[in-house]
Image 1 (spheres, rainbow, N blue to C red):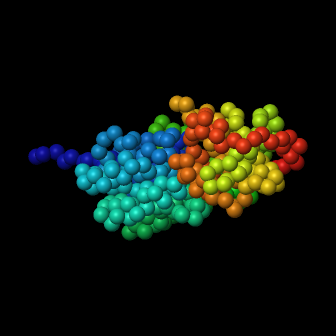
Image 2: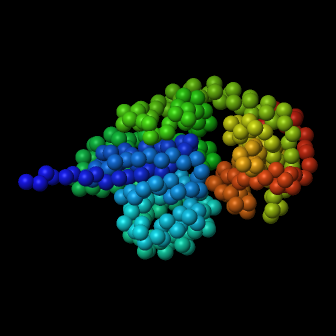
Image 3: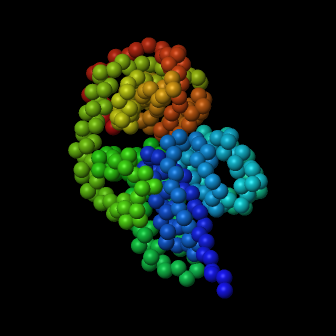
Length: 351
């Protein structure tokens, strides 16, 4: 008698790394396929640093691919329209506006032609990859017949949802949740993303991520936040500040520095001072990115501007509240109008 062969399907989870949104979106996917599917999957994690480069990471034929917090390029559209890939099930969770505006019409056709392709996207920039994937996989689990709902609630519980909400609020640049800056600072301090490549994590280790105590993180984050805010102000004082003008008449303040780790705190300060001086409420950090290119990273102090639209002008992208593009040094130099002295404003401006 022939022995019975039990085959497992192969799942590839591709996610933006190192980024809280991509990491937790990948965890959401993992939790569902680990606990609530009849099919058994071999799960491969593929962390990507380049947010516009999804299917180049596909090194073999998978049964299912999940993409989290990653945009699309022409090569990715070619992958999706290739008939040889029609049997691959693909789910995309993202909120990067630049690729969406460019490819939405093509994507509508792809979704109509490929029944195995799903895309979850929020044009309003309220939801991010982790938030979209959390909601999708929890509801997908609850909709299964004969499911133990208590098991779903145990895994996708309110505490874990709150973690996703905090990460989403930070990643979209909205910063509306109370203590959001303390939370993010505490998360960076104690759960450094350089160690969260999920490829090397066991199921137990991933569950430890979910057991984060939010109040504890916020508490330890207070001290860390005070330190980094002080560093941000000192860096602004130690470097030249420039008035720049981008295509479309966008004028605001910019700083060139290699201290990119404080940009989430220094740029909003620049943005507030920029608005006070009669320019747009935008602050930018410029730092060397590699291969002769500099990254022009922008943050805003209010919701009157959409930074993703500005970044798209120069081939970049991102979110309404946080976006960037790359350019060579001469290109950056051509954006500068003049330097400006804001030394006295720095101490009187907070985020």
